[in-house]
Image: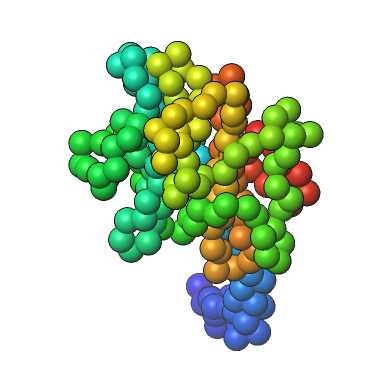
Amino acid sequence: MRVSRRAVRGFSMLELVIVVAMSLVVAAIAVPNFMTVIFNFRLRGAMSSLSGLLQNCRMTAVQKNTIMTSEFGVLPPGGPVAYIKHAGDTSAMAATDPQVQLGSPLTQITTPSGTGAPSALDSTTLGFTPLTYQPSSYLPGFNSRGLPCKWDVSTSVCSTGVGYVFYFTDSRPLGKSGWAAVTISPAGRVKTWSWNGANWVN
């Protein structure tokens, strides 16, 4: 039995071009969305790690009946790191200090600014007016009762009745930057926040 040449031939060049074009269109739509999901996941993961470290700082202060502070630094190739110290310990971060690396795409900032930046978290949203990280004048800490306090670098006094906010942003090659934050209420509650493009959500 003879099989016709038409029955066994492959795809035509036109059919292949159409399939490739459709694949490119689907990829052009899917890749940016996929990258956004990945960056959002990494940003939320970093905030969860920081939240855990702050909780650790609080528990350590209570267990050791002392004042502990949380500090931030930068590790090569530029990623922020958060670590815990005894209040008044001005030495550099040591390998034995509890710490978390937050990832190199992230940058810690004092207040959101620039194109596409969200509004700052305020007392209307939080229920308290937050302080930001100011290492030259004060450091966020917890006292022996587990309450957040402001460790004054010059007087070595830790004042209670304060809350904090820490802002972070990442750089994304395919679009807008992501924004996230971690807050500590005056009662010691630690919460993570992310910016959805219109509002802060937790």
